[in-house]
Image 1 (cartoon, helix red, strand yellow):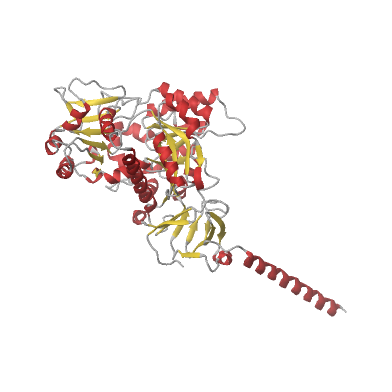
Image 2: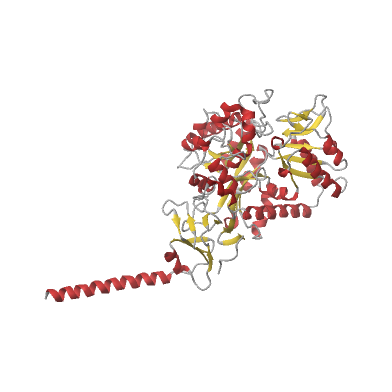
Length: 584
Protein backbone atom coordinates (compact mmCIF):
# COMPACT_ATOMS: atom_id res chain seq x y z
CA UNK A 1 0.00 0.00 0.00
CA UNK A 2 2.74 2.43 0.95
CA UNK A 3 4.56 1.57 -2.26
CA UNK A 4 1.41 2.27 -4.27
CA UNK A 5 0.90 5.68 -2.59
CA UNK A 6 4.53 6.64 -3.17
CA UNK A 7 4.20 5.61 -6.84
CA UNK A 8 0.99 7.60 -7.32
CA UNK A 9 2.42 10.61 -5.49
CA UNK A 10 5.56 10.47 -7.60
CA UNK A 11 3.52 10.26 -10.77
CA UNK A 12 1.39 13.21 -9.66
CA UNK A 13 4.45 15.32 -8.90
CA UNK A 14 5.99 14.36 -12.25
CA UNK A 15 2.74 15.29 -14.02
CA UNK A 16 2.57 18.63 -12.15
CA UNK A 17 6.20 19.44 -12.96
CA UNK A 18 5.64 18.54 -16.60
CA UNK A 19 2.53 20.76 -16.71
CA UNK A 20 4.41 23.71 -15.16
CA UNK A 21 7.28 23.23 -17.62
CA UNK A 22 4.79 23.11 -20.49
CA UNK A 23 3.11 26.29 -19.26
CA UNK A 24 6.46 28.04 -18.99
CA UNK A 25 7.37 26.93 -22.49
CA UNK A 26 4.01 28.18 -23.78
CA UNK A 27 4.58 31.50 -22.00
CA UNK A 28 8.01 31.81 -23.57
CA UNK A 29 6.69 31.10 -27.04
CA UNK A 30 3.65 33.34 -26.54
CA UNK A 31 5.57 36.62 -26.32
CA UNK A 32 5.22 39.01 -29.21
CA UNK A 33 8.36 39.02 -31.37
CA UNK A 34 10.50 42.11 -30.92
CA UNK A 35 11.40 44.53 -33.67
CA UNK A 36 15.00 44.70 -32.46
CA UNK A 37 17.11 42.55 -30.16
CA UNK A 38 20.59 43.34 -28.84
CA UNK A 39 22.62 40.43 -27.52
CA UNK A 40 26.13 39.06 -27.26
CA UNK A 41 27.58 41.89 -25.21
CA UNK A 42 27.44 43.60 -21.85
CA UNK A 43 24.53 45.89 -21.03
CA UNK A 44 24.94 48.36 -18.15
CA UNK A 45 21.38 49.46 -17.44
CA UNK A 46 21.80 52.14 -14.69
CA UNK A 47 18.79 50.35 -13.16
CA UNK A 48 19.47 49.34 -9.57
CA UNK A 49 17.02 46.44 -9.83
CA UNK A 50 19.11 44.83 -12.59
CA UNK A 51 22.41 46.70 -13.06
CA UNK A 52 23.84 44.41 -15.75
CA UNK A 53 22.18 42.30 -18.46
CA UNK A 54 23.18 40.23 -21.48
CA UNK A 55 20.40 41.05 -23.93
CA UNK A 56 17.49 43.37 -24.60
CA UNK A 57 14.31 43.30 -26.70
CA UNK A 58 12.66 46.35 -28.23
CA UNK A 59 9.18 46.76 -29.64
CA UNK A 60 8.54 49.96 -31.58
CA UNK A 61 10.29 52.75 -29.66
CA UNK A 62 10.10 51.00 -26.27
CA UNK A 63 12.14 48.46 -24.31
CA UNK A 64 10.00 45.35 -23.77
CA UNK A 65 12.46 43.03 -22.03
CA UNK A 66 15.91 43.12 -20.44
CA UNK A 67 17.63 39.99 -19.23
CA UNK A 68 19.82 37.02 -20.03
CA UNK A 69 20.35 35.60 -23.51
CA UNK A 70 17.93 32.75 -22.74
CA UNK A 71 15.28 35.12 -21.39
CA UNK A 72 15.38 37.29 -24.52
CA UNK A 73 15.61 34.46 -27.07
CA UNK A 74 11.79 33.97 -27.22
CA UNK A 75 11.47 37.56 -28.50
CA UNK A 76 13.40 36.72 -31.66
CA UNK A 77 10.97 36.15 -34.50
CA UNK A 78 11.36 35.79 -38.28
CA UNK A 79 11.25 39.57 -38.82
CA UNK A 80 13.26 40.60 -35.73
CA UNK A 81 16.43 42.51 -36.41
CA UNK A 82 19.17 41.08 -34.19
CA UNK A 83 22.37 42.99 -33.48
CA UNK A 84 25.21 40.85 -32.20
CA UNK A 85 27.18 43.19 -29.95
CA UNK A 86 30.23 40.92 -30.16
CA UNK A 87 31.30 41.79 -26.66
CA UNK A 88 30.65 45.53 -26.97
CA UNK A 89 29.14 47.64 -24.17
CA UNK A 90 25.60 49.00 -24.38
CA UNK A 91 24.55 51.81 -22.04
CA UNK A 92 21.50 54.06 -21.80
CA UNK A 93 21.44 56.61 -24.59
CA UNK A 94 23.88 59.35 -23.59
CA UNK A 95 22.40 62.78 -22.85
CA UNK A 96 24.39 66.00 -23.12
CA UNK A 97 22.78 68.33 -20.58
CA UNK A 98 24.23 71.53 -22.06
CA UNK A 99 25.00 72.22 -25.70
CA UNK A 100 24.28 74.97 -28.19
CA UNK A 101 22.58 72.80 -30.76
CA UNK A 102 22.40 75.02 -33.83
CA UNK A 103 25.77 76.43 -32.78
CA UNK A 104 27.25 72.97 -33.35
CA UNK A 105 25.86 73.08 -36.88
CA UNK A 106 27.13 76.60 -37.44
CA UNK A 107 30.58 75.67 -36.20
CA UNK A 108 30.70 72.83 -38.73
CA UNK A 109 30.23 75.38 -41.52
CA UNK A 110 32.74 77.97 -40.29
CA UNK A 111 36.47 78.11 -39.62
CA UNK A 112 37.45 75.65 -36.88
CA UNK A 113 39.94 77.60 -34.83
CA UNK A 114 40.45 75.15 -31.96
CA UNK A 115 43.25 73.49 -33.93
CA UNK A 116 45.27 76.73 -34.12
CA UNK A 117 48.51 76.55 -32.14
CA UNK A 118 49.11 80.29 -32.17
CA UNK A 119 47.85 83.61 -33.53
CA UNK A 120 49.83 83.16 -36.76
CA UNK A 121 47.77 80.03 -37.49
CA UNK A 122 44.57 82.03 -37.08
CA UNK A 123 45.82 84.73 -39.44
CA UNK A 124 46.77 82.12 -42.06
CA UNK A 125 43.37 80.43 -41.85
CA UNK A 126 41.55 83.72 -42.28
CA UNK A 127 43.85 84.76 -45.12
CA UNK A 128 43.10 81.54 -47.00
CA UNK A 129 39.37 82.05 -46.51
CA UNK A 130 39.58 85.67 -47.69
CA UNK A 131 41.16 84.58 -50.98
CA UNK A 132 38.06 82.48 -51.72
CA UNK A 133 35.44 84.91 -50.42
CA UNK A 134 33.56 87.59 -52.34
CA UNK A 135 34.24 91.17 -51.19
CA UNK A 136 31.92 92.05 -48.34
CA UNK A 137 31.21 88.44 -47.32
CA UNK A 138 31.70 87.77 -43.64
CA UNK A 139 34.41 85.30 -42.60
CA UNK A 140 33.34 83.53 -39.43
CA UNK A 141 35.15 81.16 -37.10
CA UNK A 142 35.07 79.82 -33.56
CA UNK A 143 37.23 77.99 -31.08
CA UNK A 144 40.36 80.09 -30.51
CA UNK A 145 41.79 80.44 -27.00
CA UNK A 146 44.75 82.67 -26.32
CA UNK A 147 45.77 80.73 -23.21
CA UNK A 148 46.39 77.62 -25.33
CA UNK A 149 48.71 79.24 -27.88
CA UNK A 150 52.46 78.68 -27.96
CA UNK A 151 53.92 81.20 -28.06
CA UNK A 152 51.39 83.76 -26.87
CA UNK A 153 50.53 86.66 -29.20
CA UNK A 154 53.00 89.52 -29.50
CA UNK A 155 52.22 92.35 -29.27
CA UNK A 156 49.22 91.89 -27.02
CA UNK A 157 46.95 93.67 -24.56
CA UNK A 158 45.98 91.63 -21.50
CA UNK A 159 47.14 88.52 -23.37
CA UNK A 160 44.94 89.13 -26.42
CA UNK A 161 46.34 89.89 -29.91
CA UNK A 162 45.89 93.08 -31.93
CA UNK A 163 43.83 93.11 -35.12
CA UNK A 164 46.52 94.51 -37.47
CA UNK A 165 47.71 91.22 -38.99
CA UNK A 166 44.15 89.97 -39.34
CA UNK A 167 43.06 93.16 -41.05
CA UNK A 168 46.01 92.98 -43.42
CA UNK A 169 45.07 89.54 -44.79
CA UNK A 170 41.38 90.39 -45.02
CA UNK A 171 41.00 94.08 -45.92
CA UNK A 172 37.72 93.68 -47.85
CA UNK A 173 35.92 91.10 -45.75
CA UNK A 174 34.59 91.61 -42.23
CA UNK A 175 35.98 88.93 -39.91
CA UNK A 176 34.35 87.78 -36.68
CA UNK A 177 36.05 85.04 -34.67
CA UNK A 178 34.27 83.77 -31.58
CA UNK A 179 36.32 82.75 -28.55
CA UNK A 180 36.18 79.08 -27.54
CA UNK A 181 34.08 80.06 -24.53
CA UNK A 182 31.58 81.98 -26.64
CA UNK A 183 32.04 84.93 -24.27
CA UNK A 184 34.38 87.04 -26.38
CA UNK A 185 34.95 87.69 -30.04
CA UNK A 186 37.66 89.13 -32.24
CA UNK A 187 37.05 91.46 -35.18
CA UNK A 188 39.22 92.86 -37.94
CA UNK A 189 39.18 96.48 -39.07
CA UNK A 190 36.52 95.87 -41.73
CA UNK A 191 34.14 94.28 -39.23
CA UNK A 192 34.64 97.18 -36.81
CA UNK A 193 34.03 99.63 -39.65
CA UNK A 194 30.77 97.90 -40.60
CA UNK A 195 29.74 97.87 -36.92
CA UNK A 196 30.56 101.57 -36.52
CA UNK A 197 33.19 100.99 -33.86
CA UNK A 198 35.48 103.96 -33.28
CA UNK A 199 38.03 105.10 -30.76
CA UNK A 200 35.27 106.93 -28.91
CA UNK A 201 32.81 104.02 -28.81
CA UNK A 202 31.99 103.42 -25.13
CA UNK A 203 31.86 100.06 -23.39
CA UNK A 204 28.32 98.69 -23.10
CA UNK A 205 27.01 97.64 -19.72
CA UNK A 206 28.31 94.16 -18.90
CA UNK A 207 30.98 94.22 -21.60
CA UNK A 208 34.28 95.67 -22.75
CA UNK A 209 35.83 96.86 -25.99
CA UNK A 210 39.47 96.16 -25.26
CA UNK A 211 41.72 99.09 -26.25
CA UNK A 212 45.45 99.67 -26.40
CA UNK A 213 47.38 102.37 -24.56
CA UNK A 214 46.41 104.91 -27.22
CA UNK A 215 42.73 104.15 -26.80
CA UNK A 216 42.40 102.33 -30.14
CA UNK A 217 40.23 99.17 -30.24
CA UNK A 218 42.40 96.05 -30.40
CA UNK A 219 39.69 93.93 -32.01
CA UNK A 220 38.72 92.06 -28.83
CA UNK A 221 35.10 92.40 -27.70
CA UNK A 222 34.37 90.90 -24.30
CA UNK A 223 30.98 89.66 -23.06
CA UNK A 224 28.10 92.07 -23.87
CA UNK A 225 30.36 94.11 -26.16
CA UNK A 226 30.13 91.22 -28.64
CA UNK A 227 26.64 92.41 -29.55
CA UNK A 228 28.11 95.48 -31.25
CA UNK A 229 29.71 93.37 -33.97
CA UNK A 230 27.10 90.64 -33.64
CA UNK A 231 24.33 93.13 -34.46
CA UNK A 232 26.17 94.20 -37.60
CA UNK A 233 26.45 90.58 -38.66
CA UNK A 234 22.75 90.06 -37.89
CA UNK A 235 21.81 93.04 -40.07
CA UNK A 236 23.73 91.53 -42.94
CA UNK A 237 22.18 88.09 -42.45
CA UNK A 238 18.72 89.66 -42.27
CA UNK A 239 19.06 90.50 -45.96
CA UNK A 240 18.57 86.81 -46.76
CA UNK A 241 15.18 85.68 -47.99
CA UNK A 242 12.97 83.62 -45.68
CA UNK A 243 13.75 80.58 -47.81
CA UNK A 244 17.49 81.15 -47.41
CA UNK A 245 17.13 81.60 -43.65
CA UNK A 246 15.18 78.36 -43.32
CA UNK A 247 17.60 76.51 -45.58
CA UNK A 248 20.55 77.62 -43.45
CA UNK A 249 18.78 76.62 -40.23
CA UNK A 250 17.81 73.26 -41.67
CA UNK A 251 21.44 72.63 -42.64
CA UNK A 252 22.60 73.58 -39.15
CA UNK A 253 20.08 71.23 -37.52
CA UNK A 254 21.09 68.41 -39.86
CA UNK A 255 24.81 68.90 -39.22
CA UNK A 256 24.31 69.15 -35.46
CA UNK A 257 22.14 66.02 -35.46
CA UNK A 258 24.71 64.03 -37.43
CA UNK A 259 27.53 65.19 -35.15
CA UNK A 260 25.55 64.33 -32.01
CA UNK A 261 24.56 60.85 -33.21
CA UNK A 262 28.09 60.02 -34.36
CA UNK A 263 29.28 60.76 -30.83
CA UNK A 264 26.66 58.49 -29.22
CA UNK A 265 24.18 61.12 -28.04
CA UNK A 266 20.50 60.32 -28.15
CA UNK A 267 19.34 63.54 -26.46
CA UNK A 268 20.90 66.99 -26.45
CA UNK A 269 19.82 69.80 -24.14
CA UNK A 270 20.05 73.11 -25.97
CA UNK A 271 21.16 75.97 -23.71
CA UNK A 272 18.97 78.72 -25.08
CA UNK A 273 17.33 79.47 -28.42
CA UNK A 274 14.85 82.11 -29.66
CA UNK A 275 11.21 81.51 -30.64
CA UNK A 276 12.04 81.38 -34.37
CA UNK A 277 14.30 78.37 -33.79
CA UNK A 278 11.68 76.68 -31.62
CA UNK A 279 9.02 77.11 -34.30
CA UNK A 280 11.29 75.66 -36.96
CA UNK A 281 12.31 72.75 -34.73
CA UNK A 282 8.63 71.78 -34.39
CA UNK A 283 8.32 71.91 -38.16
CA UNK A 284 11.29 69.56 -38.53
CA UNK A 285 9.74 67.19 -35.97
CA UNK A 286 6.44 67.24 -37.87
CA UNK A 287 8.37 66.26 -40.99
CA UNK A 288 9.98 63.42 -38.98
CA UNK A 289 13.41 64.76 -39.89
CA UNK A 290 14.87 65.23 -36.41
CA UNK A 291 16.82 62.02 -35.68
CA UNK A 292 17.99 63.05 -32.20
CA UNK A 293 15.90 64.19 -29.24
CA UNK A 294 16.23 67.88 -28.36
CA UNK A 295 15.38 69.49 -25.02
CA UNK A 296 15.52 73.25 -25.48
CA UNK A 297 15.63 76.33 -23.26
CA UNK A 298 13.77 79.44 -24.41
CA UNK A 299 16.01 82.50 -24.37
CA UNK A 300 14.78 86.07 -24.65
CA UNK A 301 14.28 89.14 -22.46
CA UNK A 302 11.72 89.11 -19.60
CA UNK A 303 9.30 91.45 -21.37
CA UNK A 304 9.06 89.00 -24.26
CA UNK A 305 9.04 85.97 -21.95
CA UNK A 306 5.83 87.17 -20.35
CA UNK A 307 4.08 86.79 -23.71
CA UNK A 308 5.95 83.84 -25.17
CA UNK A 309 6.32 81.39 -22.29
CA UNK A 310 2.73 80.07 -22.48
CA UNK A 311 2.95 79.97 -26.28
CA UNK A 312 6.14 77.92 -26.60
CA UNK A 313 5.98 75.50 -23.68
CA UNK A 314 5.83 71.97 -25.09
CA UNK A 315 6.78 68.66 -23.47
CA UNK A 316 7.85 65.62 -25.49
CA UNK A 317 6.35 66.94 -28.70
CA UNK A 318 5.92 64.49 -31.57
CA UNK A 319 7.30 61.08 -30.65
CA UNK A 320 8.86 62.48 -27.50
CA UNK A 321 11.34 64.19 -29.79
CA UNK A 322 11.22 67.85 -28.69
CA UNK A 323 10.70 69.68 -25.40
CA UNK A 324 10.68 73.35 -24.35
CA UNK A 325 10.06 73.69 -20.62
CA UNK A 326 12.94 75.88 -19.39
CA UNK A 327 14.28 79.39 -19.82
CA UNK A 328 17.90 80.49 -20.02
CA UNK A 329 19.57 83.53 -18.47
CA UNK A 330 23.26 84.35 -18.05
CA UNK A 331 24.50 86.23 -15.01
CA UNK A 332 28.19 86.38 -15.95
CA UNK A 333 30.82 85.40 -18.51
CA UNK A 334 33.67 82.90 -18.81
CA UNK A 335 36.90 82.41 -16.91
CA UNK A 336 39.12 82.29 -20.00
CA UNK A 337 38.12 85.80 -21.07
CA UNK A 338 38.06 86.99 -17.41
CA UNK A 339 34.33 87.54 -17.71
CA UNK A 340 33.25 85.20 -14.90
CA UNK A 341 31.89 87.32 -12.03
CA UNK A 342 34.12 86.79 -8.99
CA UNK A 343 33.82 87.88 -5.35
CA UNK A 344 37.45 89.04 -5.46
CA UNK A 345 39.62 90.38 -8.32
CA UNK A 346 41.38 88.01 -10.67
CA UNK A 347 44.77 86.94 -9.39
CA UNK A 348 46.41 87.67 -12.76
CA UNK A 349 44.55 90.97 -13.41
CA UNK A 350 43.69 92.79 -10.20
CA UNK A 351 41.79 95.54 -12.02
CA UNK A 352 38.79 93.32 -12.75
CA UNK A 353 36.46 90.88 -11.02
CA UNK A 354 34.59 89.97 -14.20
CA UNK A 355 31.20 91.06 -15.46
CA UNK A 356 27.57 90.87 -14.48
CA UNK A 357 25.81 90.29 -17.82
CA UNK A 358 22.03 89.81 -17.44
CA UNK A 359 21.04 92.12 -14.60
CA UNK A 360 19.96 90.57 -11.31
CA UNK A 361 16.58 92.24 -11.72
CA UNK A 362 16.28 90.57 -15.11
CA UNK A 363 16.93 87.18 -13.51
CA UNK A 364 14.44 87.88 -10.69
CA UNK A 365 11.70 88.83 -13.14
CA UNK A 366 12.44 85.76 -15.22
CA UNK A 367 12.22 83.57 -12.11
CA UNK A 368 8.80 84.96 -11.21
CA UNK A 369 7.53 84.34 -14.72
CA UNK A 370 8.89 80.80 -14.58
CA UNK A 371 6.86 80.05 -11.44
CA UNK A 372 3.70 81.37 -13.07
CA UNK A 373 4.22 79.41 -16.29
CA UNK A 374 5.72 76.21 -14.82
CA UNK A 375 9.13 76.54 -16.43
CA UNK A 376 12.51 75.57 -15.10
CA UNK A 377 15.05 78.36 -14.70
CA UNK A 378 18.54 77.66 -16.03
CA UNK A 379 21.09 80.36 -15.31
CA UNK A 380 24.64 80.48 -16.64
CA UNK A 381 26.95 81.21 -13.70
CA UNK A 382 30.67 80.49 -13.70
CA UNK A 383 32.26 82.79 -11.13
CA UNK A 384 31.78 82.45 -7.37
CA UNK A 385 29.87 85.73 -7.16
CA UNK A 386 27.74 84.76 -10.14
CA UNK A 387 26.82 81.48 -8.43
CA UNK A 388 26.07 83.18 -5.11
CA UNK A 389 23.81 85.79 -6.68
CA UNK A 390 21.85 83.13 -8.56
CA UNK A 391 21.49 80.94 -5.47
CA UNK A 392 20.23 83.99 -3.56
CA UNK A 393 17.59 84.68 -6.22
CA UNK A 394 16.53 81.02 -6.31
CA UNK A 395 16.26 80.87 -2.51
CA UNK A 396 14.23 84.09 -2.35
CA UNK A 397 11.88 82.82 -5.05
CA UNK A 398 11.43 79.43 -3.39
CA UNK A 399 10.50 81.14 -0.10
CA UNK A 400 7.88 83.26 -1.86
CA UNK A 401 6.56 80.28 -3.78
CA UNK A 402 7.00 77.08 -1.76
CA UNK A 403 6.60 73.78 -3.58
CA UNK A 404 3.14 72.23 -3.33
CA UNK A 405 2.07 68.58 -3.45
CA UNK A 406 5.67 67.45 -3.74
CA UNK A 407 6.11 69.26 -7.03
CA UNK A 408 9.79 69.89 -7.66
CA UNK A 409 11.22 72.90 -9.45
CA UNK A 410 14.60 71.42 -10.42
CA UNK A 411 16.04 74.82 -11.26
CA UNK A 412 19.56 74.68 -12.59
CA UNK A 413 22.83 76.55 -12.57
CA UNK A 414 24.60 76.02 -15.85
CA UNK A 415 28.37 75.47 -15.42
CA UNK A 416 28.68 76.12 -11.65
CA UNK A 417 32.44 76.05 -12.18
CA UNK A 418 33.80 78.20 -9.35
CA UNK A 419 31.90 78.25 -6.08
CA UNK A 420 32.68 79.81 -2.73
CA UNK A 421 32.88 77.21 0.06
CA UNK A 422 29.94 78.83 1.86
CA UNK A 423 27.71 78.29 -1.16
CA UNK A 424 28.53 74.66 -2.01
CA UNK A 425 26.05 73.18 0.54
CA UNK A 426 23.26 75.38 -0.81
CA UNK A 427 22.97 73.34 -4.01
CA UNK A 428 21.86 70.28 -2.06
CA UNK A 429 19.79 72.27 0.44
CA UNK A 430 17.84 74.09 -2.28
CA UNK A 431 17.61 71.18 -4.71
CA UNK A 432 19.48 73.15 -7.37
CA UNK A 433 20.90 71.02 -10.18
CA UNK A 434 24.54 71.64 -11.07
CA UNK A 435 24.64 71.35 -14.86
CA UNK A 436 28.39 71.03 -15.31
CA UNK A 437 30.74 70.09 -18.12
CA UNK A 438 33.51 67.88 -16.82
CA UNK A 439 35.68 68.40 -19.88
CA UNK A 440 35.90 72.11 -18.97
CA UNK A 441 37.88 71.16 -15.86
CA UNK A 442 40.73 69.57 -17.79
CA UNK A 443 40.49 72.05 -20.66
CA UNK A 444 40.60 75.12 -18.40
CA UNK A 445 42.90 73.79 -15.68
CA UNK A 446 46.12 75.17 -17.22
CA UNK A 447 44.93 78.74 -16.62
CA UNK A 448 42.64 78.25 -13.59
CA UNK A 449 45.48 78.64 -11.12
CA UNK A 450 46.65 81.82 -12.84
CA UNK A 451 43.16 83.32 -12.80
CA UNK A 452 42.11 82.27 -9.28
CA UNK A 453 45.24 81.39 -7.33
CA UNK A 454 45.68 78.01 -5.59
CA UNK A 455 43.37 78.65 -2.60
CA UNK A 456 40.27 79.58 -4.58
CA UNK A 457 40.97 76.86 -7.14
CA UNK A 458 41.29 74.08 -4.58
CA UNK A 459 38.31 75.18 -2.51
CA UNK A 460 35.78 75.71 -5.26
CA UNK A 461 36.88 74.85 -8.82
CA UNK A 462 34.87 72.03 -10.45
CA UNK A 463 34.07 70.51 -7.05
CA UNK A 464 32.03 67.51 -8.18
CA UNK A 465 32.46 65.39 -5.05
CA UNK A 466 31.81 68.31 -2.71
CA UNK A 467 28.57 69.07 -4.53
CA UNK A 468 27.41 65.45 -4.63
CA UNK A 469 28.04 65.09 -0.90
CA UNK A 470 25.51 67.90 -0.32
CA UNK A 471 22.91 65.83 -2.15
CA UNK A 472 23.12 67.87 -5.34
CA UNK A 473 22.54 66.26 -8.73
CA UNK A 474 25.23 66.78 -11.36
CA UNK A 475 24.21 66.61 -15.02
CA UNK A 476 27.16 66.34 -17.41
CA UNK A 477 27.80 67.72 -20.87
CA UNK A 478 30.22 69.58 -23.11
CA UNK A 479 28.86 73.08 -23.84
CA UNK A 480 29.52 72.31 -27.52
CA UNK A 481 30.71 73.98 -29.66
CA UNK A 482 32.79 75.42 -26.81
CA UNK A 483 34.21 71.89 -26.49
CA UNK A 484 33.84 68.92 -28.82
CA UNK A 485 30.43 67.35 -28.23
CA UNK A 486 32.14 63.98 -27.63
CA UNK A 487 30.81 62.49 -24.35
CA UNK A 488 33.71 60.04 -24.11
CA UNK A 489 36.13 62.92 -23.60
CA UNK A 490 33.91 64.38 -20.88
CA UNK A 491 33.48 60.96 -19.23
CA UNK A 492 37.27 60.58 -19.21
CA UNK A 493 37.71 64.02 -17.69
CA UNK A 494 35.12 63.12 -15.05
CA UNK A 495 36.95 60.04 -13.84
CA UNK A 496 40.56 61.10 -14.39
CA UNK A 497 40.84 64.91 -14.24
CA UNK A 498 44.11 64.25 -16.03
CA UNK A 499 45.77 67.05 -18.00
CA UNK A 500 47.85 66.74 -21.15
CA UNK A 501 51.06 66.92 -19.11
CA UNK A 502 49.96 63.91 -17.05
CA UNK A 503 49.19 65.87 -13.89
CA UNK A 504 45.83 65.43 -12.15
CA UNK A 505 43.73 68.48 -11.32
CA UNK A 506 42.67 68.08 -7.66
CA UNK A 507 42.17 64.29 -7.79
CA UNK A 508 39.92 64.16 -4.71
CA UNK A 509 37.09 65.59 -6.83
CA UNK A 510 37.15 62.81 -9.44
CA UNK A 511 33.93 60.89 -10.10
CA UNK A 512 33.68 57.13 -9.98
CA UNK A 513 32.85 55.54 -13.32
CA UNK A 514 29.27 54.87 -12.29
CA UNK A 515 28.88 58.45 -11.05
CA UNK A 516 30.17 59.68 -14.40
CA UNK A 517 27.84 57.38 -16.35
CA UNK A 518 24.86 58.45 -14.26
CA UNK A 519 25.74 62.10 -14.86
CA UNK A 520 25.40 61.43 -18.60
CA UNK A 521 22.24 59.31 -18.36
CA UNK A 522 19.73 59.23 -15.51
CA UNK A 523 20.96 62.48 -13.92
CA UNK A 524 20.75 64.35 -17.21
CA UNK A 525 17.27 62.89 -17.76
CA UNK A 526 16.26 64.00 -14.25
CA UNK A 527 17.54 67.49 -14.99
CA UNK A 528 14.90 67.70 -17.72
CA UNK A 529 12.04 65.91 -15.85
CA UNK A 530 12.49 62.91 -18.15
CA UNK A 531 13.81 60.23 -15.79
CA UNK A 532 10.56 58.23 -16.12
CA UNK A 533 10.99 57.73 -19.86
CA UNK A 534 14.76 57.61 -20.39
CA UNK A 535 18.14 57.65 -18.70
CA UNK A 536 18.18 53.92 -17.84
CA UNK A 537 17.48 50.69 -19.71
CA UNK A 538 14.25 49.43 -18.17
CA UNK A 539 11.08 47.84 -19.51
CA UNK A 540 8.65 50.54 -20.58
CA UNK A 541 11.28 53.22 -21.17
CA UNK A 542 12.31 54.60 -24.53
CA UNK A 543 14.75 52.42 -26.45
CA UNK A 544 17.52 55.03 -26.52
CA UNK A 545 20.82 53.15 -26.45
CA UNK A 546 24.49 53.89 -27.03
CA UNK A 547 26.82 51.01 -27.95
CA UNK A 548 30.53 51.51 -27.31
CA UNK A 549 33.52 49.60 -28.66
CA UNK A 550 35.12 49.21 -25.22
CA UNK A 551 33.89 48.68 -21.68
CA UNK A 552 34.52 52.12 -20.23
CA UNK A 553 33.36 50.86 -16.84
CA UNK A 554 36.27 48.43 -16.40
CA UNK A 555 39.08 48.97 -18.92
CA UNK A 556 42.31 50.73 -17.87
CA UNK A 557 41.64 54.43 -17.45
CA UNK A 558 44.12 55.61 -20.07
CA UNK A 559 42.28 53.55 -22.73
CA UNK A 560 38.95 55.31 -22.26
CA UNK A 561 39.65 58.09 -24.82
CA UNK A 562 40.17 55.51 -27.60
CA UNK A 563 36.62 54.18 -27.18
CA UNK A 564 34.42 54.56 -30.26
CA UNK A 565 30.68 54.67 -30.74
CA UNK A 566 29.46 51.62 -32.67
CA UNK A 567 25.71 52.26 -32.67
CA UNK A 568 23.42 55.09 -31.62
CA UNK A 569 19.83 53.93 -31.28
CA UNK A 570 16.98 56.42 -30.77
CA UNK A 571 13.52 55.07 -30.13
CA UNK A 572 14.49 51.62 -31.34
CA UNK A 573 15.86 52.93 -34.63
CA UNK A 574 19.56 52.69 -35.45
CA UNK A 575 20.38 56.30 -36.33
CA UNK A 576 24.15 55.83 -36.50
CA UNK A 577 26.32 52.80 -37.02
CA UNK A 578 30.05 52.41 -37.34
CA UNK A 579 29.94 48.62 -37.55
CA UNK A 580 27.16 47.28 -39.81
CA UNK A 581 28.30 43.67 -39.54
CA UNK A 582 26.82 41.50 -36.82
CA UNK A 583 23.20 42.32 -37.70
CA UNK A 584 20.51 40.10 -39.13
